[in-house]
Image (cartoon, rainbow, N blue to C red; front, side, top):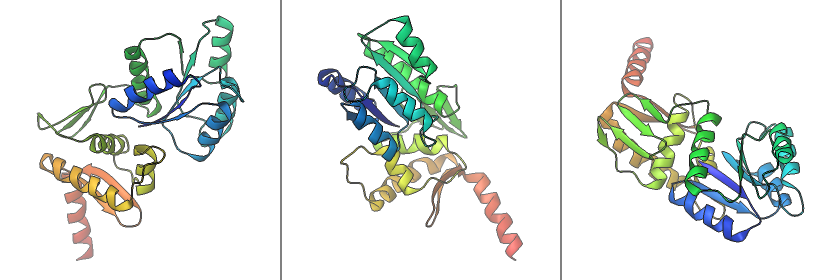
Length: 238
């Protein structure tokens, strides 16, 4: 999951960025409304944490432009503000904010709201994603296969989450880079192939596999279903 934080308080932004990265998220930060608007127009994010009191362009204007842009119209937005006035809160919600937090706030509550918005943004209301013998806990950031905990790196965990949320659909290398990596990270296509290979080896014992469609991307599917499809295709070709 890739998060953009638009916050001009450098201390708060640094605290949020470090904390969310420790939870396994890819996090980028901008300090003005114009930077936020430019980043949202050019890059792909899964969630925006938006301070209303941004310089150069207000948080409300950033939100208004985001909702008017087809590529970001459905992006979950969590508003942060130093003001807890009802009027300001109503404005933000009317413009399309999904959640609202007044400063100061507890980090644990913000992280819980981030997880909830992530689930809502992908159409899921459950904290645990089940796929065959695989169980992925989005809250605890833990995966179990056949009842045994999988030892995954942060990058492998992020890759697994992306594929699970798009089960049966192709995910390109470019999409994986967009959702896994922050600004300035140099991640090659070969590196993505290595991450996929490592994850593939760790889940294949559970009857699951990640298939590669050359030139298009990767797809997580049930190994049994894939085998049946392969056998059917072989019979049709015979």
